[in-house]
Image (cartoon, rainbow, N blue to C red; front, side, top):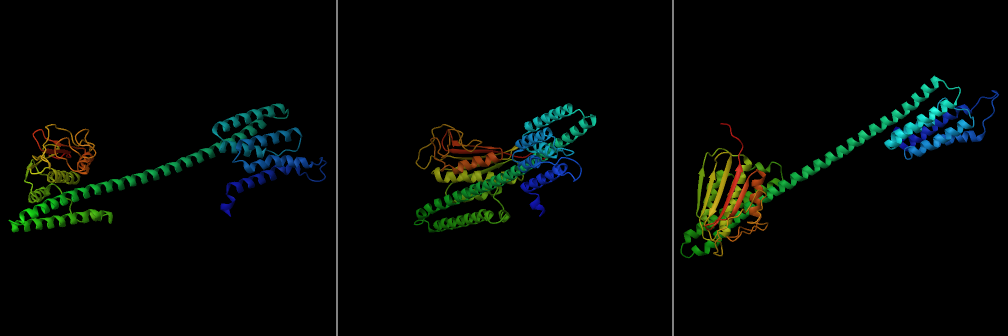
Length: 411
């Protein structure tokens, strides 16, 4: 019942009824008082003052205009008046609470002027009348203005809450997208590297099988081990999609695994020399993983595109920057070497301006994959505040150089 009574339409109807009852009381004169009876149109005039209050929220200004006209007519026809113009007070409150701000201020000014004219014309008006009327009407207007302020603050709070929900949803969506991109990069690195090793070793199998069966057995055993390792890492990555703590089931690869990575690449037929300089202090997890993946992707590209070649991997812990380089002396799968023009293959944004485009095609040296690997290198470096350079070397071959900033270390 309380909720039903507080509905705006029902509440306004009740206000109109109460105001009508209070305003019509002076017209209900007791019998035998000697007063002339009030004709029916007098009651209709009071009803005209109160009826617009039913629509006061939807049409606050028109409600105030109609009630003001009805009150003026009542004063001219000399009908008995209530102690206070209750309908006018409610109308002024409504304009201050629900009309536009300029309309509310204009209504306050007009009301003050009208009251002044009425009091000046009335010879019986005294200072008390001025004080009481102005004080009561000012109170009605201030109460309405206060209600407007509270409603606007509540609306602002609702909008802020809605904006906060949108921001949280957008942030959650961004985190999901970043996590998907991270998983995609990891999947690409795992699949591209291990599958490339398997393909190279599988192609070498028939070559060594007739003359060196023992070597062929080693090759196929290496293919099996590489495939099992790829499956294990893919299961680990896909586990992230199932549980929140799945990523912690096995340690992520890092620079400590570069020896094993180089050994696997040597078994695939690419001679690799690994050189580490500087202090091998523990690296932040992000830098550790990114450094490993960049070297892994670079060696994978050497296997796939360099042709008969050798590779050199260097890791330098000097200063506040971890520097990586992977260099090969290959001429490409088609036997065409570089033309001696060095380019920035992958910049801070992951895609170079002229060396390696969105499709990952090099200038004139061997072609470094289909682009995802090079772009992935740039993204990894960019997220850490570093950069990657990839492109043909002036004296032939291909090079990948990366710089990853390190946090300051206590001395």
